[in-house]
View 1 (cartoon, rainbow, N blue to C red):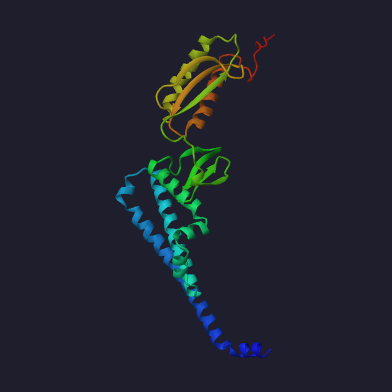
View 2 (spheres, rainbow, N blue to C red):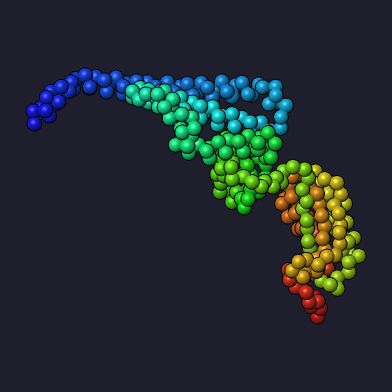
Amino acid sequence: MSILIKYWESLHFEDLAVNLLAKAIELVLLIFAFIIGKQIANWAFDKFFSHSPRLLGQTEGRRKTLIRLFHNVMDYFLYFLLIYWILAILGLPVSSLLAGAGIAGLAIGLGAQGFLSDLVNGFFILIERQFDVGDSVTVDKVSGIVSSVGIRTTEIRDFDGTLHFIPNREILLVSNKSRGDMRAQIDIPIYASTNLDRVTQIIKDVNETEVPKSPEIVGVPNVLGPRTATNGQFIFRVDIFVQNGQQAKIYSQFYRLYQEALLKADISLPTPNTHSLPRQKS
């Protein structure tokens, strides 16, 4: 009992209160300085890269990729400094902990092996230009538009609006749909008894009139003619090559134009998987 009393009396609460108050003030000032410093760093960063001749010579997607990546690296560095200073203010021997644990032990303890894999794979993605911000890609089973490329993760926004976060180490196969021209393949269901010469001429007439109005189309549409689809449906196929990202728009536009022109010429069109002859009008 006497030992506890002596220990209680040995505590200097005034000194402890002053010390805690001083550390609290230091932490508040540190966080305030960090917020101001981060805003200044972001402003200087944007100012510098907006006038960088090397970046100005890149495509817009490439510029966005590099800027967001450098922003990501800068944020990691600033937050690392913030945590280091907070631990130092609290009196923890950060330098001794780092030296005592060793870099390898620290990496394993913090689970940095996965982080390093993300970093290395992200580096090769960047160097090899596998994709840039704004590209339409398929990564594994995820398809969408690249929203951001970071040192740890890549963000892909699905076509339904879902935002996917993919660790860079998990990116093994990338299908980039934004490199070069893309094909809009239009398959129009037709009857086996349909006059193919008339269909071909109508399709060509539509192309001659409408293709000049669509600058997204590259070259001349390729009228491939009759085919049998994998489901057994008899079809008439037209391939139109367009600028990447425009295939869905051109597909819908020209499918409608072809269908309207064929129906206007009294050519009966079946619904998919319809193989019987058209019903004769009484």
